[in-house]
Length: 289
Image (cartoon, rainbow, N blue to C red; front, side, top):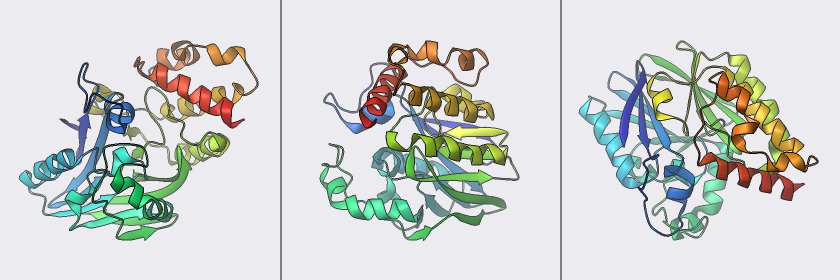
């Protein structure tokens, strides 16, 4: 775990992208969906209050998040879940005594899948047991204050139908969860790509000066985050995937070639394991069509 500080009052807890390091030798969602690509959870801290945006991939990681913040004087915690995927909810039990906020779609998904998540059968091992369900649910938009910092939680359908982003309007900073990634988005719902692409326009209209994704380059995160152009780069990649439904030749293009312009202008940063993600994305989109 690396503790990064991309902005005043923002702490990133980053794990993964360590060559040769695995959670377990056998296939598992911790390595294949999180550590191999790198993953961060965030905390918004003001005074003795903190909003923890996702609880990371394990109880151990979540315990480190809580203890680090407590050592810095935090006494009141609020948890926000960016969406239902396991690498974002695995440590929630460490915050079982705190308010846990999610949009209504996340709460519905977790309640439906709770038994399978706790048994380790939803996406395979390891299980998340116990799974702590949200204690507060919202739809659309929720405004709240963390100490002296104002935060707006915005529900959207990007990457998954239950995404929640955290917008800090005074800092012009967006915690975007998995709605965007660097190098490219992971396609979990290929039938909804057009919706995802359109909803990214709503994030563009916020005009964030900095974007902090959960999956990204640790050096970029540590230096303050990504520029606004990450949104357009994500939309362009989604458009290319949509073209793969009918353009057979495009399906064989290497990721580095497909996003070459955005690599040159610094919107995206190449990380070789995302070639496999891209191949999975293409296969999912073609199968769904």
